[in-house]
Each structure stands twice: as structure tokens, then as C-alpha cells.
Length: 112
Image (cartoon, rainbow, N blue to C red; front, side):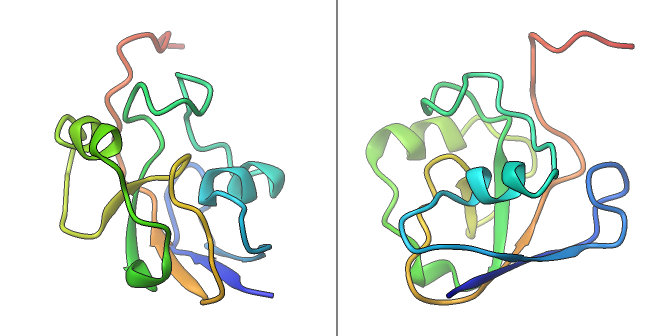
């Protein structure tokens, strides 16, 4: 069973985490199931960039991105070559190391 190592994020996962995953799950679904509340304003339909992640290890093992995801990623804050949308990054057989960027672009988020 593949694992996802989530690097520390000051708000969402201060100590980092090691999560068990199943092939075919999205990185976002695994994070949410483990109480790491990654934003997902469009409810996982590839219509925003709030679930943007950076895959530090295992990038090539993920399902390939499609044109829609690539177009959405062009709008993400802090875009890198290893960026993916967590809702579209489907886990295969390899372990992953992911970073959740410090900021996301969520025009619908209410400030508390």
C-alpha cells in the first residue's frame, strides 16, 4: 500500500504526516480522510486551484495530468514543475512526498 508523506505546513499539518493510501485514490481524498483540510473550493471537479500541491518525490508515478488540469495549474500561486491539483493526482503504486503550498488562490473564501 503506497504512503503519502505530507511535509509540515504551518496551519494544515504542522508536524507533517505519513498517510496510508490506496491505488486509485486522489491525493486530496487521502489528505481529507486524515483530517488534513486542504482547500477544495470547487468540490474536486478541477475548476479551481485551491487544492494545489507540489509533489517532491514520486511525481512520475501519478496519473498524467490532462489539458484542463494543466490550464487550471497555470493560475496557481507558486506553480512549480512538480505541481498538481490534489483532486486530480491519482495515486498509483509508489510512495509520494507532497508539499502543500503556504498560499492558495481562493476568491470565494471568507476571512475570519
